[in-house]
Length: 355
Image (cartoon, rainbow, N blue to C red; front, side):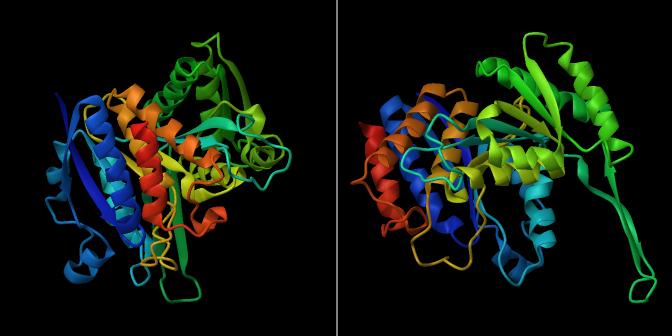
């Protein structure tokens, strides 16, 4: 029997409500495919910060290091500044474990009405590949003359050839693997003087190594517009840390609800564990009500299965999600126009996986 060690971090808010539904589905997958998932739970969260002054213990990364993967719920809650919760937990995990690819599918699911008109399932189906460890999200900079009328800040982006090339290669390899031979690069080289022309140069260089893949590039402003006006034109989009962050939220928004969107923070070489988490946040406004949509968490678990080499099992979970959403008689959470509770939708998907 195959066996995998999974670190489970429900985190804050609705993370504690959607995570049990993903674990429910993993239990079904384990029984169906003869796979054992040994789960170790870590209750690190903003509540941890309030009690200890840290988002995770000093040896937190060492505790996570030997797992095959990390399944994360949501991080962030009122009372703890976002830069504290992010840089105290998520950013260290991504950077120490070299999770240099943030991967997010953008797919219009059956049963979901998108805000863009005249689109059907199959029309919107692409991937955003975001550079995840450098770029605009650096700690290079500082503040001067704090508290005076001459207070100023400096924030410096950092792009390396090593970091840029490897995320672009991942995007091209993904395009080949998925038989979606088209990669679009997000840039802003008409306004950002150094980093974006460098990004464009590296994209052109890497593209030459993949003559079978069609390429184009768009400035980030028109690219956002095209996500809305003609999302069917995209297959794989590769972007820097900031631009990818924006695009990978805009994409699910175009498909109808961010509540169903998954993501993976990937270390492609498998030298360190990768982290899988829904795109939605902790949603404190509905936390504790039991009405959060669990699909983003369940789909993130499916991405984890695929990353672990359990490709058929991962596809099984995605197919079960689509099957449930295709049936008008199955439960829907309020964000999808229904009245079902989180566990109702989770149980329906788990039953569909069994079938």
